[in-house]
Length: 313
Image: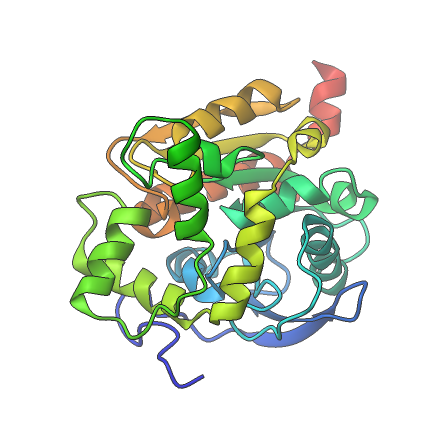
């Protein structure tokens, strides 16, 4: 692709991985996977959202890789992972399973963080044995399990059929995004970020989102439109923390609160005033810090596993 897929300098420029590999999913889809940091350090797995790539987690990778083994992968069709005809939540779950099997030893635990569609990936994989084998704890950032289009506030009118129809056609547009221009940055900021987002944050997100192929963006928009993962939330037994921005138009706080009410082992919801949908970029220190807390409590070699905690409670 000729477009610049991410910024080249600053805090959101992706660091070079210690190694790269290809995880092969159940249907043969090939997933670009990166490993950062020491091989013997506690593991963190990062799943990015719709229209993004591993570059979205640059700030978290840069900080965590000093003393964690950070595993990040491109969802199928995104970043450096080739597109696939299969676009479904089952495919997302298959892909996460493949990455876990390719990068973690049998029985090895990791903190798994998912943003937006990455969080939906976690929910889809929650009932899977491979996920349960490896998930020490989970962080869900700016995500939801169902009713995404109906609850979105991208179109600033009252809820109802008209707003849902307009939102569906805006998010599911086939139109190319084109180059990153001042107008494009303003549109992206309105739809996905808080009003106080710094220009370098907007630029970083715009480069990533505009690099996503139009056909991939369109295909996955239909999956999000029909999303129903409420059953997966109820199966997500690992200790799970939830983060959301109060100005999130794509997955407003109503989703985070619904997740908290349904999760079997919710550690609470953190609502970030004035922040939008891109929380790992808009609040990098807070998101990184939350991941560190989860690792220390649940995934550090000396930490008690969550099953033992529950049994001893």
